[in-house]
Image 1 (cartoon, rainbow, N blue to C red):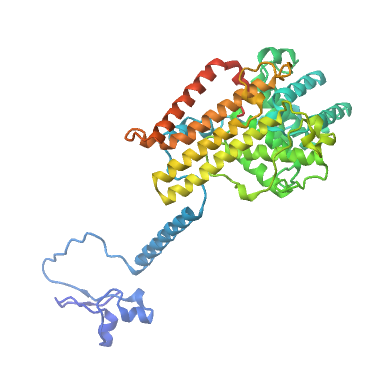
Image 2 (cartoon, helix red, strand yellow; image 1 turned 90 degrees about the vertical axis):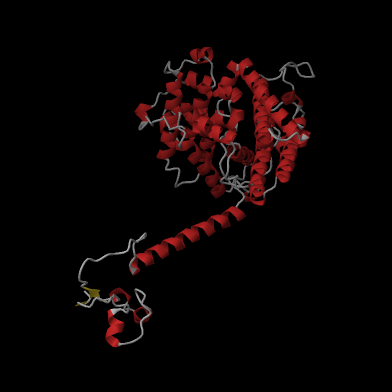
Length: 485
């Protein structure tokens, strides 16, 4: 503690400088003590003043050297964070940081931002509601017609042979855990797309179809975990994930869905599914299924609602579009000469259309991020116009059976397959929604500008919204089959 003296005059030099009779800069700590590394002991003498002492009111307390050092470190950290954010913002091609009012409302109303309501109930094989062989056959073939073209996770003929073999072995639940994950995900998706009459005729092991879908979804997760899928990359794991992405939200597993999505993409990269040709197998059929599954993951990632920064970019992979062939044709010589195939409706046409839509939306979002950094409404207007024209061009190049909304007979007099109408409806809703999403970014200028382009964007948004509402009202039963999208 500093010495005490009775003088009325307060010292201006520190005790050490005063004792050594050297010049002191009268700061605390002073420059001399700082130079010698004695700043912690630098202090002035304490004066015992007579009479009533009056002290000046200080707005801010005097900080010690240690406190000043802590504050300095804090400010350096804040400055570093600020510079890092600016650097990331200038070099990153992600989504715009600022959201429009429509996007904020979309985030608030979308189910994905709700709290997960799903709880895993399948912890061992005794918890599984096992279907009979006949019921399993019904679910499989229903899925072949109505859901296989949504995820494109399996080669139908191969999967059917594997299914028969699993039942013939007599120990169905003792088979390959990853194949069982694919199987239970497949039948859960199939059941989710059944109406009441179809479910009643299927001979299900449980009357409550919603509970049964959740049980089989949980069973798929159970077998994935049993196979330790996170540490053992396998193509069947990616196949199972591609199916489960269409189930997760519908069973209320909102938190797991984006994690599975990113896991599937990363595992696909580990397996070489992101290369051409895919490295998962030397078999041309398996390679083609790999392309289909890969693009399913990309579609889900680039068309996710509400939008988020993508975990993979267009430059990160090189995978060609799936061949426009049926699963049966993949096992023939047409896989080497796809141009020789007769033109007719095939489920994969829908898949390729969704790929083009996903690419268009991805590029739009990336360029939106660039424009936000550069500024300028003209750039934004040009981007909206270019993207909307690209979407219209995709629509105009769709195969005839996807453009005809009547679902009537084809030109050769034959009826279209039953899944064509559902694909038409889904594609119509998807393109309407994303045209609306693209054009609404100009919404903040509609009220105070009479520009022709702005009037056009407003008209597209309103027409798209009205058409979506009209289709929803008109096709309530049909739309029940489109929940994964």
